[in-house]
Length: 309
Image (cartoon, rainbow, N blue to C red; front, side):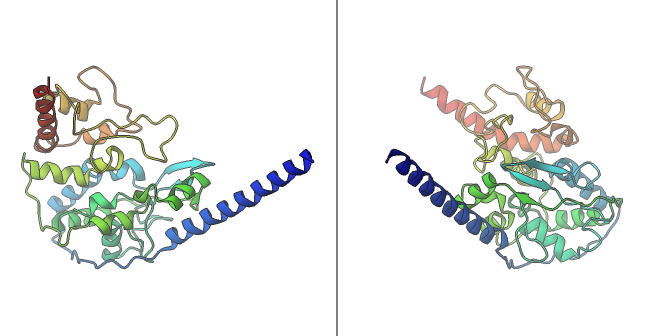
């Protein structure tokens, strides 16, 4: 009798597990195959010259950190290869074999950068379009101009495969940021600005935080914490605003952390997760603007904490 009950329980468990697995697969497939039709705001070609190309290069390599995911040569690289997470390679952004630049029209670049959408309307995966959706028209033209002329690299990404942990997180809706189009189009401003003046101001600092994709790791509210699909060895991103964020830091401390990867306490920032070598190329004006935006909240939190003591 006991053996019969155990067999029944085991069979019931298999049935429930099979139904759950099927539901996860079906729900995640629906999300992955969803087609988006964003209203494109055309960023027509501007004057291509050294100033435009240099601005595009700086935005791609130092501000937006495209090289962090797509490799220093922008030819793509492995992002994940794990039985539970799956296998994901970043796209080859060049015109070489396996690259997208040779077949992307300007509207395709706009779909990808500002809306997180593939040419076929499906969402890109793990593309930080929610930040890039804020990009000004002039900077968008500069980025596309630069990407269209980078040296070709022959490298084809492997076929993407999503593991069961990733599929479960997708099905449960725990990580909408996996779907670039969903996040970008939900938070995209109604009209992009033509240009954001470069100045040591909070406004420009907020713009750089968006384009620099700081919220990808430090969360939408910049208060840090691990992502549901964080790797076991991944350190929790610290808060950039709020109580205790950069408490006691000076502007020079912040600049040293961004450019040398070292905190005032002497702790080395893990370059595998905090891409400070790229941020080292930020200008003094950009460092000042970021500090003006982030430190204003940090100082306010410190003052509030001091007032309660």
